[in-house]
Image 1 (tube, rainbow, N blue to C red):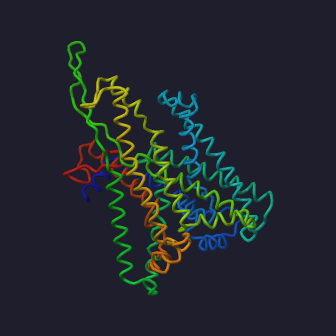
Image 2: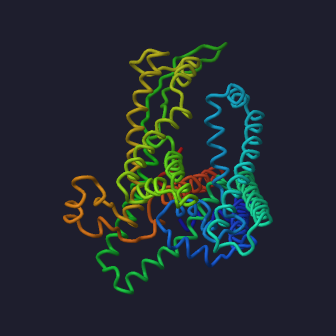
Image 3: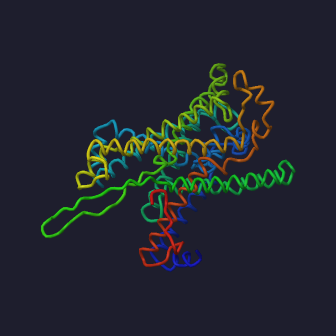
Length: 456
C-alpha cells in the first residue's frame, strides 16, 4: 500500500491530476464558509439542529452541510443530479433526445448542454422557494423583501453553476467522477462531527461501552456488506462463433455478460427520498392546514407509513431505473449481430427473455439491499415508532426495548445513503488510480489481485 502511494507521486501526470482534484475540492470547501447575504446563520443552524432526522437532513447531506448554514453552495449538486435524471427519463420518451443519445460524442455534448441549462432553471426555482419560505418563518432573514429574494436567487444559482463547473473540471483534468467526488467531500467533512457526537455521548454516560461497541461493529458490518454487494455480479457466459474474414479467423472465444446486483446505484434511494420530501416541504410552508399537517406527521422519520412508502419507492425505482439504462432486447440484438450467443439459449427474442429473467431476479436482491441500507440511519437515529401501528402498536411498544422504538440518536453519517455514496465513490476512484498505475507498469494497491470498483 505504501509503495503504491509512493508510485502515485512518481508519475508526473497522475500526480498533477490528483493535486488538481484536491485543489478544486479545497475551493469547494472554502465556498462552504461564505454565507448568503441577509441570513441569520446562527438561528438557521439552530433550527436545523432541532429538525434533525427530517428531510432537511437529506438535503443537507448532499450539500455537504452548506444548507444548514445557507452558504453560497447551499443547493449543492442536487439540482444537477435532478436535471441529469430528468433528461435520462426524457431520453426514453422523447425521440429527439433518444436520437441525440445515439449520435456519439456530439449528441452527448448537446445533452450535457441541455443538462446545464436545466440545472440553472431548477436552481433558480429552488432558490426562490427557499427565499420565500425563509421570509415566512420570520426569524432567519435580516431584511426581508424583493431585494432579499433576488439576491438569494442570484447567489444560490451562481453557486450551483460554479459547483457544476468544478465537477466537470475534476472529471476532465483530475481523477474520478467530479460530481461524485464533490458529494463525497461534502459527506466526509461531516464524519468528525459525528464522531465527536458519539464521544460526547460516551463521556456523559448517555451511552454505555456496550452500545458504542455495537455501533462500531454495525458500521464495519455495513461497510463490508456494501462493498460485497456493490462488487456483486451475475456473469452470463457468451460464446462467439468463428468467422472467416479474408484470410483471418475471427471469433471463437468465450466471454461473459456482467449483470450488476445493484444496477441503479444510489439513484433509486434519491428518487424515493425526494418524492417523500414533497409533503413535508408543503407542511413547512402551510403549517396552519391541519390535513396537510397530519400527512406531514405520518411521513416523518421512524413512522410506519414513511417506512412502508420508502421501501416500496426504492423497490419500484430500482426496477424503473434499471429498465431505462439496460435494454435486454438491444443487448440480444448486438450479441446476435456480432455472432454471439448464450450456450443453450437461442439468439434473438429467447436470449432477451433469458437475460431479462435473470436481471429481474437480481434487481429484487439489489432493491432489498438498498432498502435495508437506507433504513439503517433512520433506525439509529429515531428507531421504529411501532406505537403508531393500528391495533397492535401499544402492545408492541410496551414489549420492545426503548432503543428499538426511540432510536440511539446517532447521526446518520454512519449509514444509509451517505455511506453508500462514500464507499462506492471511494471504490471507483481507487480503481481508476490503480488502473493508471498498472497502465504505466507499476504495481497496484494489491499485488496478488486487482481492486474492482462498482463497474469493474
